[in-house]
Length: 110
Image 1 (cartoon, rainbow, N blue to C red):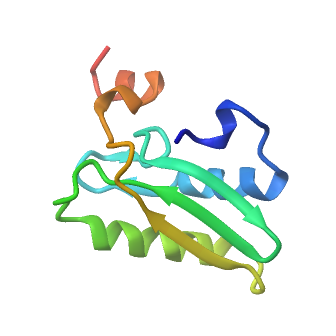
Image 2: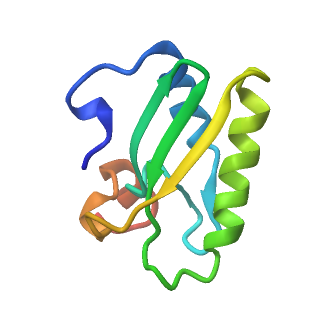
């Protein structure tokens, strides 16, 4: 599964969700979850904003805090009648190869 931006354009609302997720920072790595490759898919259908994402590891100690931050961030930016539906998935497993080139450079991994 890859983020929709690879194959089809995002709707304006999906772009807004993605932009909001750029402000959600993984507290252990200090980088946003989109550029870390943790966000696999964004769909807004009707009044439901669905986000499929993963963690760097199933044992991520900050997982619950990160999910709470994602939910709070999206709830603040979406209209009141839009429900946030976050799906935590483990397939495909996350790997450092999913990190954007920009994030790798910011992290000194270039």
